[in-house]
Length: 499
Image 1: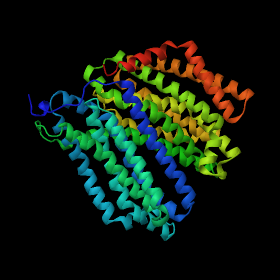
Image 2 (image 1 turned 90 degrees about the vertical axis):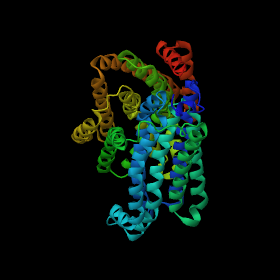
Image 3 (image 1 turned 30 degrees about the vertical axis):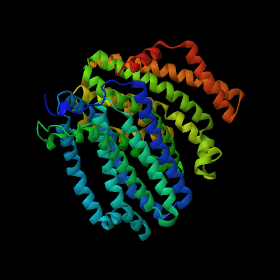
Image 4 (image 1 turned 60 degrees about the vertical axis):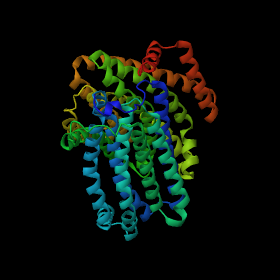
């Protein structure tokens, strides 16, 4: 037995529902803090060259953080296998070395060449934009890479079926970062948001690391050596497809710019709301399921059932949230973002979420299917698929925009994401594809019908918040009365996930 396996251990057993709730709550806390920060930025700093420059620098942060989220989904199987074999320290150090091999040089370049990067990002904008970007870059790049280390720490804890510590780390980091921004914004300007994000990253990475050290898991043997190259390849595979899917959204956003003023903004806020629903449900379930699925092993039927059950729970919650937002989303957006988003603009934004429903369905499925390729150790398709999907989506988006304008762009997002799901499942097994597609479509149609009937009926007789509350009550009541078998099976499945 290795020295590592003799160390005090975190409990292997846990409650999957409790873990899922904690993870989902931390995602909502992070998303909520980001939303408040965005609203405060809009009210405090307006829309000008300085904000353009800062947001240009912030785009670098977003790309790296998106990659970090992908890492968190896919490295859990490797760490779980390593933990079972007494090699968690070596695996952790290998992944940490791979991340630092990228993070340290990139951060040094960002600090040393911040002015040149600011000029490059802002182009022909006024000098105040370049100055704003240059001040933020030295903080934003290290802060973003801190999130990749946070993902590694959270994944190592997940390998031991511990999720609460990582959830606390992410949530406390988000809240602390928001406090720093709001407290210092008036005196120090936009760079205070970069400071807040740096503190966010430090807490999100530091809290899991301290827990791992205190548990003894990073004090054991490093048997097996440190292999950086293979980990870099794995991280590249992990990031390729999520970044490509983000590219699909950017293509849609660029297409919206040709449809008139305000369409890009409406699409952005509708997409962010929809993406938050997916992250808080399907993504959180994926985060807590990779480790137990790796331990128990997974066959084709098991993989198909996992996708269907996770989608049942996710879509049930999303249906309720989307129905409420469709009825009162405009009011909420108007309150948060100001009068520019009231009236017709706010209502259109709520309706755009409805048009995004097919994409939400496809994104839920992707969030569950994607990590399974690493559980099943079949990730080779990811990089070529990422390139292929971007090539397909450009003419698809152009064609759909010419037919249906903004709705066409939204539907092209859904179609492209659905095609990605088909390709991923087919790469595992055609049997998985056939089993899963039937189950997913059945689930989506039932939830969609329930949502439309419940909230549509309420909207016919009531208005605004009253309609939303009544629609939600009808939705829940119908679920309680009908007790769909798929939902009950999904509930039992998740409760037993960590058994």
